[in-house]
Image (cartoon, rainbow, N blue to C red):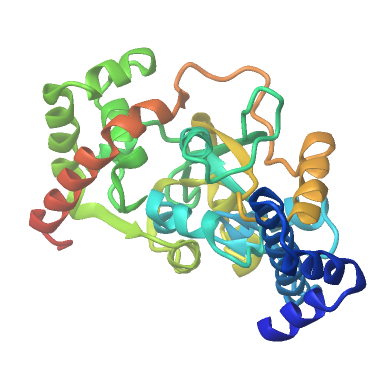
Length: 340
């Protein structure tokens, strides 16, 4: 194929004149120019052939963390499919592979604001603004307390998650340090306004893990959206913390009766951002940028006024402490007692 391209280029009428003139005694600079010209045309022809060889009708995707967010994609975009990323697929190495893959089929990826800033600084995402910023705001991720109203008549708060004497039963949490350590300190009466000052210290981290020791025998873990849906469908847990969209969609999918209710006074929230992978082709990039800058898909908005019990998850804190606290959480999990 490359040989065919070269022959076509060399025997085109225009280039043949250059090539013929190259055979005559000519200055060195003119010979060099002729060679560079021919080489450039060959490369451009090969590039055009390679680009045209890619399947043009292949589907494109918008990557989102939960199946329950599918509606935000299908209502706002055409000829686009959602691609589901589980929480344990949001490690930076996984995002790097996703954004740098080629041919690229992801039009946009929904990330937290810290990950968005990191991949922008490393050149894995395309700038959307003249300032060089890559992420386009897409609302907020929200985790909430939920409970079974058939066994608990009053809405629980952070401390009630640990009160197994008054409210016996299993609790469900995502298996990871974020936002579990924040929940532990909130349950231990740390004010939201001071929480990250406390958690950033060795004593604060010890305090959070000691709090988890107290509840560990009652915890059911989930790692994927499908696993969370399955656990909720069994009606086995009394209360827990999960993304609001998972709790609500689980009720509609599995017809939970009685349905779990969500406590909107205790919200853990963090900004969500759309990012465009750096390897997305030019035409598709322009289409996606236009969509994001004019009418981007968004998650549900936060209440106009947030209760004092709510907490904004600090992406900057986790950018600095995710590795150390993640390793400590894994050690804690490996040595913690099993469920009785």
